Each structure stands twice: as C-alpha cells, then as structure tokens.
Image (tube, rainbow, N blue to C red; front, top):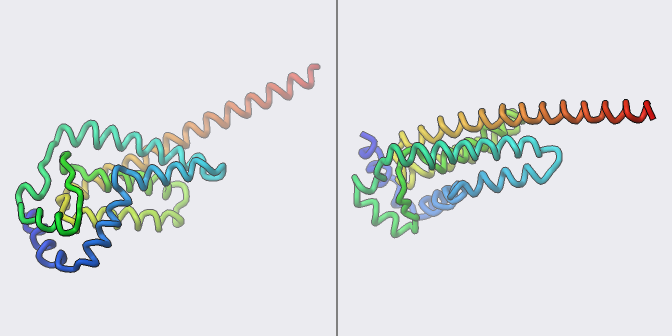
Length: 195
C-alpha cells in the first residue's frame, strides 16, 4: 500500500525538476539534525532564550538516543528503493543522498519536530513558523521517496514526544537552578547582616 503511494508520488511529481530541487533543499534543513542543532545553539547564545535552547538541546539528545541508537537499529526497515528500484533513476537525476540506515523512523522528521515542539511549548503561537518548517521537512522526505509515510508519521510522533519531554525537563532544571540561586542570595544577605 505505502509503496504504491510512493510510486504514485514518483510518477505524478518527479517530472517537475524545479520542485524536485526545492524539496531536496528543504530536506537538507534536517540533514543529520543540522537545522535543529543550529536552532538550539542560536537559542543558547541569547540570555532571553537560553532555557528554551536547553529544552531544545535536551529534546534532541533524547531524540538521538531513541531514534538513532534504539529504534533504527532494532526495527531496521529497508528503504523504499529496495522495493521500487526505479527510484534510483530519480535519486541520481536529482542528486539525492541515499541513506543506508533504517527507514523507520524518519530521523529528519523526528529531529525537526523535537526542536519545534520544545520551542512551541514555550512560545506558543510564535512557534508556528518553526512547526511549518518541520512539517515541510517531513513532507520532503515523502516527496523524495526516501521514507515511507509511516516512517515520517513515526518520526513526527517520536520527535513531538521528545520535544515535550525536553521542555518539561528543562523547565524542572530551570526551577531547581532558580531555587538554588534564591537560597544563595538569601544566605549572602544574612551573612552581610551578621557582619
């Protein structure tokens, strides 16, 4: 069923060279989690967004452990071109890199949604553009036929869960750190009063 859908995508859309290249460049945003990692680093630089950067970084760490270390190795699902070798012609013409790891889940999708959801939990409506970028990356994985739709759906669910976990873990750490700072300040004030 899924391979039939990807065959339809190939026949219907892959004749559009401009769209192929657009989708290829969109997918590069999620390549090796680079877009999400850069996003986390930018957030970490600025004081106002630092804790959100921590949330995104934690979400990405959980994501890497779940997706790359556990799921991809244990599921080991073959990529779509193993069922539909004709895709090789498209990959060559478009210059799409052929990943050799497991197809399930989509690592690009998981990483992008881990970052986007952690950010959106904090900033609500302001997170919509980030969610749109994550969605475009996810759709590009199906468009380029490097993943089955269920791989992308799995990446979305797992990445979103990692994003939520990252947000709540960072929030707990921030609360603990702030509590410690307040205690430290109180102790300093008491020390000054006694001297």
